[in-house]
Image (cartoon, rainbow, N blue to C red):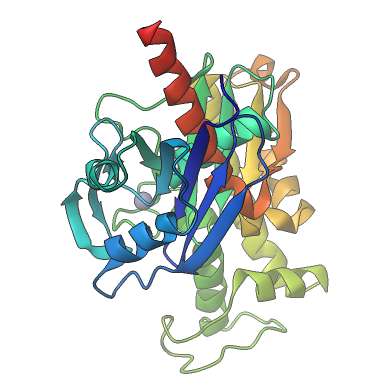
Length: 327
Ligand SMILES: [Zn+2]
């Protein structure tokens, strides 16, 4: 491989577009750029193309894109993403490929993050990996026998929408009782708000109109701080999130039998508040104790760069496959 083969990685987020270019060996970018997505205003594609243009060079041979889903990675099509209303059945990979003249490889942000952690991060050397990101939502990606699991439609794996209680609270997707509806930052905040409104004692205070859960703007971070200071409602909110997370992961163990489960995202930073009840629940709900033998539970290693590095890893992987086919 020549050293003058560059890869561009794109992390298309709801808030920011990040782009970076890398030479063939390094994970330190040669150039990088960041701009606001302004996802609800027209012209997202033009802003994206401009952000790529800012790190472009004639030595670029491929591009990887981590994007919000749901999307079809096989055709590079964004099906419909609530974050970017103007994109419906939007052929993003094809449009970028036509604009820049290189192959463009697209998959959803959680899959790309999982692939990045497997290639460069906490999951290096493992053959079977479950990656979970817990922030405002819950997302995930799976490496199964050394391959990213994408599925028939390319919709695998939506780990946040695993049903852990069909009669549970509404999820961000509109269905009920998904693990996201119990264990995401949004869910923890909503549960705590409801408990305060029902008269539970706590040191936490609701801002805005306390009769409306939408206007009472507690954050998972504030609740974590209260929990660390000993607030029993805040502690119970994380215990509940950990309990349902344990049920979900017990299900993932039964399906994927990973050697490592990696946690990323802001809510996973809270530590024992979430993970003590999680581990207790996991042990209780796992079908057979052998799943837990030598199972590694790890923190994500790539931080805020996980989307970029996942897209980089994916573009390099796809390119090396193509080169092997040509030879
Ligand atoms: Zn859902």
